[in-house]
Amino acid sequence: MSRMFARNFSFITAVALSLFIVFPANAQSSGRAASISMDPSISAPVYEIAKEIKIQGTVAKIESVAPGSTAGFHIEVQAAEGAFDVHLGTAPAITAESLGLEAGQTVTVVGMMATVGGNPMLLARILTTPTRIFILRSEHGIPLRTLMPRGSATSAKASKGGF
Image 1 (cartoon, rainbow, N blue to C red):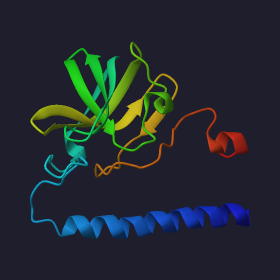
Image 2: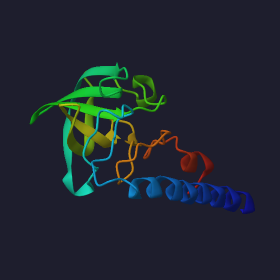
Image 3: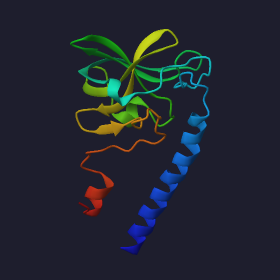
Image 4: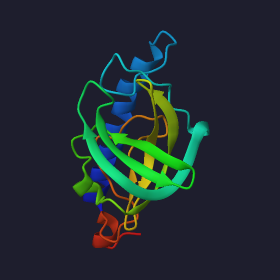
């Protein structure tokens, strides 16, 4: 019990410290749009959860884009509303293999539409595949650096008998 408490306390402390590091940097901005991409010359609007949309469709294309454009991992989702360029993030852990993605697969994406580098794209916050749910960005649009699948039968809680 105390080992679990210590681990949870360490995790909460780490999250709290990261919030103090991330948010003051944003507070010093000059009112211009925050940059979401790794390339400082490409900027996008600040992520607004009130502008989120939800699409469901089929993965038509999977690609990793090199720096210079909108770097990161993208999928093209063909939905009833049309085709969407979905930006999943830039972390090295985000790959087709780690997300279990393949062309022709049905996915649901929650995110905000933005124009980045002159290209419209859906900045994905939540990706749902047939077997897992991935939280890719925080509610403030900050990309998460690790993948923690939610709702998986093999999650840590399920394997340890947690609630």
